[in-house]
Length: 375
Ligand SMILES: [Zn+2]
Image 1 (tube, rainbow, N blue to C red):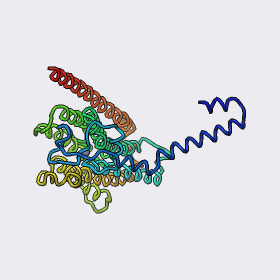
Image 2 (cartoon, rainbow, N blue to C red):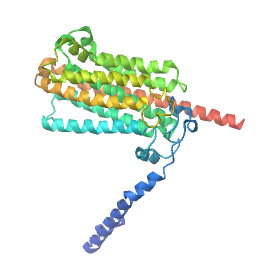
Image 3 (cartoon, rainbow, N blue to C red):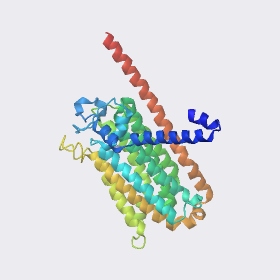
Image 4 (tube, rainbow, N blue to C red):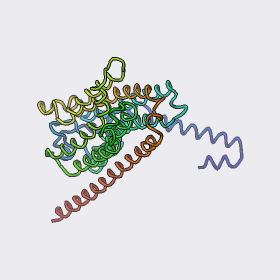
């Protein structure tokens, strides 16, 4: 503020000195802030990881006995724990690196095929698709990185993760419908109701996952997994139906995207298996805490699945782009253009409502605990 006043005083020599002094201060400040040694010392001062018995039940994962970050520290601790070894490190990095690969690959593709120069309606499902990939990868990495901050943060961040899953599902549905489906499948009953049903199931899987997280506490009953897996599984079955139809009804030889779609389906089925079953940690409790537990394998396989599917969708986009508007009509593409942000809005609203319910419940539990303490 003082330097600004000095400049306004119109004395050029004083003004120059003030600018130089201000620049020096700014350089000193940032030089100190981002110096490697201070960064390393803040990393070495991070609290050590703890055993499962030292964190509340909510944060414990079945058969994972160690490598937990302590709860209740500052946000900066959890941000810096990105560079620390704990039982969420691989979960965070697998989706962060996949996000970087998706963004770089799309940038190269966009430059090669001139998507940046003009964005027509035919490109919109592709842009939504890539945005949905980045959304789910970022939401997942953020949730796994910061969830140990507090009980409320844990719930709120995993609700955000479920929003990412819903957005991903509908982004895939749009891309597969417009670029990867056959006319015969689109004329079928499934093809006719595909987009509204995909939007409904995407929202339902977000709502059910939030509800299951909110309602069932550790040790988790089977209902919880069913509540999460059934709507998500139904959504995935529906979303992959255009590709499944194409894989069984066409010869693969002359279509480079077919092999990529087949690999992607295989990777997705493997990922779904590791999401549903806590393997291999179930057979080796405490031995897969830092590396090798089922959720890490799920993240790794899902990342590979995403990168493979992205390549397949790019191939399909290139073969359909020129005829897309003629094939579907502008009206259907415009409805799709509006439906994607609508689905994002509904999913975010659901997560916000669930967060409020959790906040109210945690507040009640706190006041009840205080009353018990007072006797
Ligand atoms: Zn995860």
